[in-house]
Amino acid sequence: MTIIKTEHAPQAVGAYSQGVMAGDTLYVSGQIPFDPLTMTVVEGGIKAQTDQALKNVFAIVEAAGMTKENIVRCGVFMTDLGMFADMNQVYEKRFEGHKPARAAVGVVALPKGVMVEIDAIAVK
Image (tube, rainbow, N blue to C red):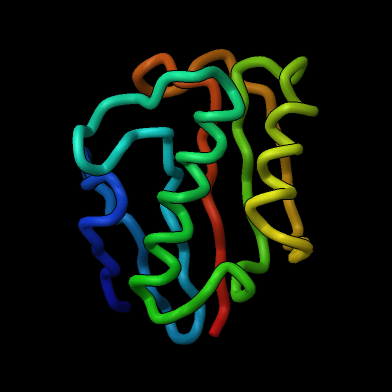
């Protein structure tokens, strides 16, 4: 097992790692829309938050020597599934035609009051 860490994604603030490689598989911890430079939530609603959460996921994937095309599954956690279409629009644009398996789940609350959190699994 190898711990993956990058300054291009928010630093872990709890008992977890940004990512963990187990063999050829990378498990990316849930990423909330924190700007890694300021460690604050980005403003601009669900679209801006989805974009930042995915930037954070992609930064960890890249730190493991992979690209977004190596992502095979994402989990999307949202506090309001009524915003699904807006989230999905940004998600689809960021993935540029790559379509990993995905689950989107409505939750009561997320850390720091954010609207979305995204985790991922990537394979070399």
